Length: 448
Picture (tube, rainbow, N blue to C red):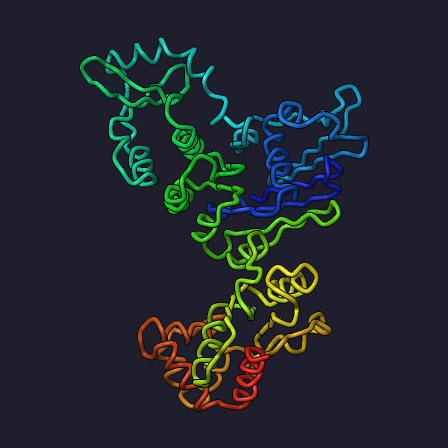
């Protein structure tokens, strides 16, 4: 099932198109600078299930006659247009409850449930007290394990689940004799938030969206939460989309889970990035190093380190090699640095790409780009190995598929046929064409 959201002329956003495949059943983290449109997107998604979201949470006058939000959910299409009487966007379409129940959205301060739950819980206190007094509760074992693993202790072992009028409430039973308990709204905002997040997951809300997931959680809890959510998304077949400014949390994300939102003169774009790209754009390394080398992936970064170390020459510059992820993102970060100097002045930043990018016209004119003399390390290994050991290459190694070079490299390294460094030694010895000149370029850059 595909979810598509298109926002036009809302607040400072002229246009924003966001799309996610809800059949993935996984995590998606959205990061970006303040004002890029993250919270507006979250509100827009919530608006599909709670139609007055912007009236509740947005400032007045963020709409005009050109404002519009359009949605596609599977085969269903919905549009919210400007209503002069409401001075807000509104839809005349009937949105089925089954569609509304697909979404669970948590907003940041002061509109999220984790910050506005006290009155709702208090009115059910007499019912909760009665249930607890009569042992009319359950032990939510999965939730207890979830919370204990996130916080790294056993403080939730006595958590109880109470059901009242099709609503679920939780309380920690502190004294089984006197029936003294702590209601969930008296827990910390972080603890209460995690309980409500779990409720959304258990309800199998297909799209759970959380703005500022890191609020009220310490760094350790943030890291462990991501591990737990990844498991629960797969188990319950749900998706969790969230925003964050936490570097500790970003470092835990896998490939395909981290996306960067950028607002360029009101036009918002979203694209997949690496952790290093996010760290560079959002936090910066300015003047931390003398030289910066930006590369496509970790393997190429390791190869660059290998060639520099192999030269056995004194390097007086402090340098760092950063693998950004994809050639386009690597060059994009280099170009951004040329104007905004995230790292340092342009002359101190080198972009290194695989040789198969050399013919790309879109990279022409970008300063300080060098290309690996191989199409890629993995492709060079596959080409050399297949030409000399075709039987082993196809029969004894698991190298079938679209990228046999990557598969071969994994076989070599993961099964310890050769270490990564031994593979580098093997390549530079048996396929040395252009490597010496490439090495000299790296050394000259570090010495300039």
